[in-house]
Image (cartoon, rainbow, N blue to C red):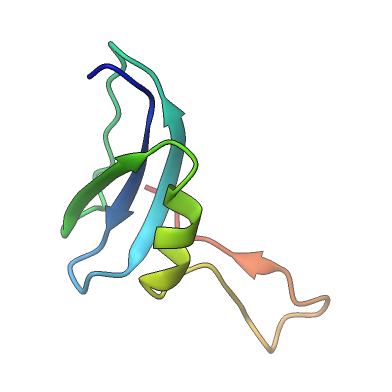
Length: 73
């Protein structure tokens, strides 16, 4: 690849579960939980795509302080 990419990792249902931003040339990334695959977009556009794909980043209403929860790979 000639330029940096953002990688949006998807679960089996197509929801975004992880975002790797600004991945440079000769880099290797993997996500064992990404049963739905990965979408590669130009650097800087991954966050918008992940949000549009109903990302799993959310708020647990029962948690005190309501912090964002994120699944890890």
